[in-house]
Amino acid sequence: MELLGEVWDCATSRQPAPSPATILLCALIALLLVALPTTWRAVRMLVTITHEGAHGVVALLTGRRLHGIRLNADTSGLTVSSGPPRGPGMVATLAAGYLGPAIVGLGATALLLAGYALGVLWALVLLLALLLVQIRNLYGLAVVVGSALVLVGLSWYMPASAQSTLAYVLTWVLLIAAPKPVLELARQRRRGTLRSSDADQLARLTRVPASGWIGLFLVANLAGLVLAAVWLLPGITKAAGSWLGGLVLD
Image (cartoon, rainbow, N blue to C red; front, side, top):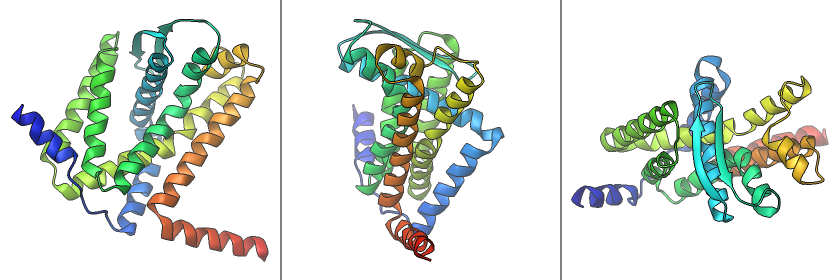
């Protein structure tokens, strides 16, 4: 209980916000992690964990029965739930996956703005712990346990400034990475190599074609990224907006 009390005190203690230059640097680091092929695989697994976790949470919230989650070595995943095969609950469950990373990123952004950078790290640990009880394959178990242990170690032993930087980098990673799997899905469908995606299942359940759902996912994820950037970097985004406005007027 004493240990839990210490964790709670750490997670709920406020940290001073880094300088705008540091926050921008964190965003650039996250952009590199998403853009570079050598690091994208690890980032892609983080996105998959969030994607499948979002499926699971919404399935439970809509009254469906969650049977388990699998995470695969190729960075794909699968969430299995049972309930009515049609209707709002099924639609919401399917739609949640591609929106999950941006939603978690925006939630982390809100914590950062409130000064709870360390709270972001412990919140991610909590989400991994909740996900752990639903994992149904050995590889997924290793990924979730390993990720949680790394986060716990960093959250406990790193200096406060480094913890804050890590929280900002992870937040930016989720926000910047969120649109990329949607673009990958669009490319796969154009090539005709995928017809069983969340978007395809949603198309069969609604009158909206798969391309419409993909467009919706992409717009929502980009909107989340822009909104977070405006919140975290108000001065820089305002200057960029003024510059773009000047270009349009010219």
